[in-house]
Length: 392
Image (cartoon, rainbow, N blue to C red; front, side, top):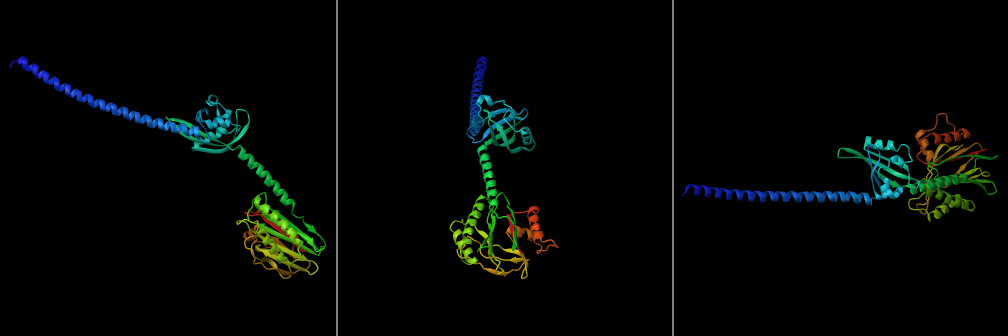
């Protein structure tokens, strides 16, 4: 074969091989490009999904949310709820300084604390666009992105909640004042002296007491009650029991039957969670007999010829079972005898602190003053009330 022809054939074969290789290489590269494009599209879809979720979170959150620049404290982004709370249009919010909104002068200190600790929570006062002040529950959290620092702050409008809480506090304060006004004053007659103390654990008390003269002034009748709980509902229960006791004073039956009648009556409106301890007494000046019926009150203090110190009592609590397991006690008395009826709030304090070594229960005024100081200077976890009696 002609050498020229051989060379030409060789070149043609070589070109064919090169073309086949290039074709395969191009197809391979095309597949790789297609795969990269698909991956880019997938990542873009994921990114867009995340971004849409983020936007949905901002739009649909029930709390106002803003993103603040951590260097200048200006708003970079705000959601619809924030604009609704503060009364701004979208274009008016961006780049507002946080001080333009906050009535609280130390709002920047809160934000700096968020940067230092990662989070800050507080109750703050802000001013709407229309000038009206609102109270918000304010929370600020530090975030990082693209080597930058920002603060995400949430706002929850609690203006109405705070208003209702303040109104409730005023109502409770008024109820406490009314409750205290219904208590009897201290008393000094030729036959008997009475001293009282009344210290609620909160603004209203579950304790109550009362006394009055019955049977033409020949008998001093009274009671002390301690209803479970400390709130406004408990105070209403004590008021109801006081009304019942006013009726019970008029019943011509033994004292123990009056207590049983009280229990049967309160069973109709006490809830399952409500009960009460009570101690009722009648001091007959003619017979010189003190009649006592304890129902859940666990003890009282006395200085008399027959008893001295703590006298432990008991009996069923009111409002739990229809038939009470109670006992009527008859104590002979004489001039100079003293009796100190107290609720659990005082009994618990005496158990913890004890009596002073020089305490003399016969010294009526000094002992009454000591009880009064005890409930004011000691840490208490219950209402504390006392009704103290001395025969003249």
